[in-house]
Length: 204
Ligand SMILES: N[C@@H](CCC(=O)N[C@@H](CS)C(=O)NCC(=O)O)C(=O)O
Image (cartoon, rainbow, N blue to C red; front, side, top):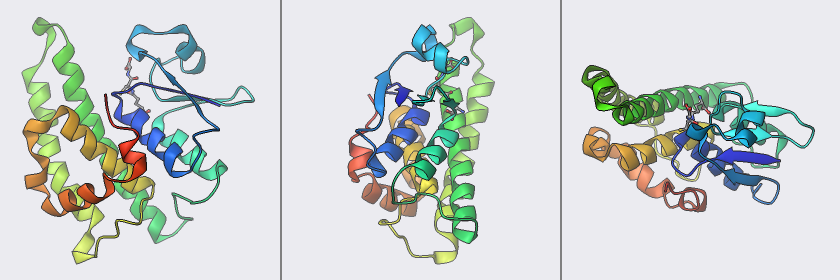
């Protein structure tokens, strides 16, 4: 199967981390492309011209990072990155949704900054930045509810979304200083950021 990605997309990185955590590197051919230039090969897989997009052997195409991550988890080998229906699954999905919202706000602010100057909205960027300031402490609370001890060895789809969202804040929003908003999350991130899957998929 072919996975369309680029090197600076947080959505693509989330899926690349899943590929590594599942040990699927030899089953997945990674194709780097620029989605903003509407390359024909990507459009054939994703008419939205967004990465990530996955082209399966039987011609089925999957778009959207969360769908692709869940599909790779369900159809690939152990370890399972999403628990069966029950509290652990809801915890992971809740965390994944909040982390995705942080990624969306962070990415929207970056895209806004790339528009021609006359078309940029400072108000839109500050709305996204305010959302990030509120959401980072909420992420910490969602990851460590009521003093629950950290489990760095546990790295499910919720944690992967969270780790990649924080990595993207470092990459594109260093001025936010997210670590001072969520010191416990910062310790957790220092730990999980050393995982081979995170190291092998660094932005750039
Ligand atoms: N909800 C999608 C978002 C994907 C997305 O927006 N990808 C960006 C790269 S970070 C992209 O390809 N943008 C190109 C465009 O919007 O034209 C997902 O989770 O996969």
